[in-house]
Image 1: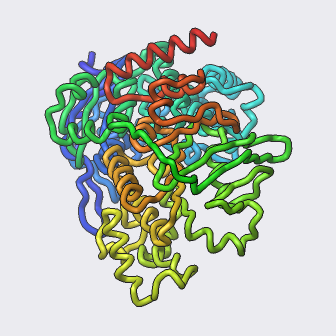
Image 2 (image 1 turned 45 degrees about the vertical axis):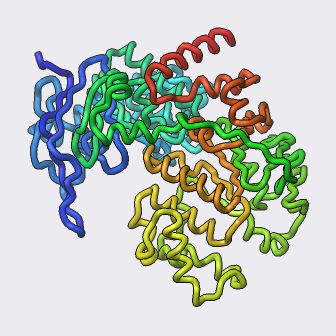
Image 3 (image 1 turned 135 degrees about the vertical axis):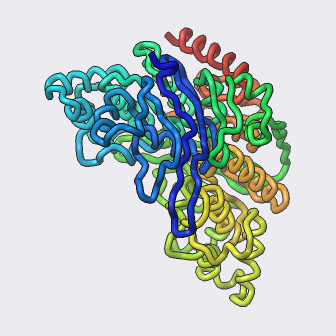
Length: 542
């Protein structure tokens, strides 16, 4: 018998690129036992996903190359098996769920067929495969599973699509499930449900779970052990409690220090007139009411966080405020001026004062433009802001303001990391010297240290320039550190509104309490208390 279900020994992977050789993984070793959850923790570029791809034989070679090591599954080295043998194992005994389910589900086939296909590809009869797919869809909590078998991926929410990916991975009852960032960008309640579901399925089947993540809260909630990766190396390993309370390596301590939700909460106090008043804001799509009479005020230099699950109406508020789509009713008063009734031409001058930073900078930055062109485009549209002779110096100044270098102005967006692209998006928003910036999930997919840097940058800009923020987010620890007031949304309605201290220390509504209980904390002891609280709330509701 093998010592471990899966064991990686001295694995090294490199890639040949136009810029030279990149050593992505450098001599790493770890093991996974049956029924155990091992987390591989690290930021983008640490090598955690590359090592998982090597297990699944998903590395394109070339340009990739495995230069050393063994991957022992039940004591047999997978790297010595043929391509055909590896295909027989993948899906059947080793399965994987990916970070972006929409990108890995085929948009033109019903989801029931896609789940059943995995079983049919490994020789299961069609009737048996479809019956297994239906049973799994029911097991992972898809509403009306029989009818849902014939639906397509776009007809499901993000959390439901992730559940479908889990069902697909479990069709053949694998011994090992690799979950690559399975909860990134999911709502806190959906994230908790997905992690709970994985734990339940693991208890039922005894499979080993390899959890790849950059989220310390996920490690605290779900892992038995964790290895920490930086620059292709394992720098530390241990239980979540050992790593949290007795971290030895500077990189681990840096990750822990960057974890949100540990700072001082702000105590806002403003006697000035609000610069923004939203009154009875409504939006309907046919018979569906997406917003049902939302009201709030915002003062200069203040941050209002809007939290809630997907479909609660958070982003709809932002789109209506910026006139990106028409409202069905209500008023938005900007510095006393009603703006919902304005024409696009009349809105033009106001857009200088109202800017937005979107969730995905890869999609919101034009890939064909240089950083200089992206930032200076604002002055092309509003030529009275700055003479062209000063554009170069101002772009350099803005880049330095967001923590980048002036020479970055000549590069294109694809030459930057995700965190750097988000900084470019912030610089573009600042080019017009706005009074309000709306951040729609602007930091949700960033690594923890990059997230901390971006939040610190926004806070410094708020305090120094007096910019107001509307901060749409599902990451409650970040909200706790950054916001002054919190608006809690559910199904198009405001269920609670108060200061950040009131919401986090004395929530009045059950929905707010459930959101807070579902949030993940990097401290395993705090997370254990939250799990107990979550179970108690669920029992009360039952």
